[in-house]
Image (cartoon, rainbow, N blue to C red; front, side, top):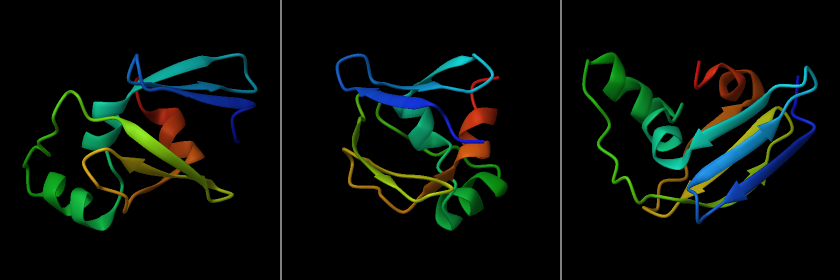
Length: 92
């Protein structure tokens, strides 16, 4: 399931997704960076380590990947592709 619409607010530091079930989801940029699903970040979390992220980090680019989006962050990190289902499960 993909969102009906998506918007990115640099000022608020939020990615907004509107889902077909009527749910409106607002995801904090820094939290998205902490929850990056790339293999490097996932391995870090599996070791019980916290991914350190500056609260001022922002999503500066979004690249559609069909089954999700690749997010590019202001700290230069761009390895993670966030599947729609993964994004839908964040923030619960």
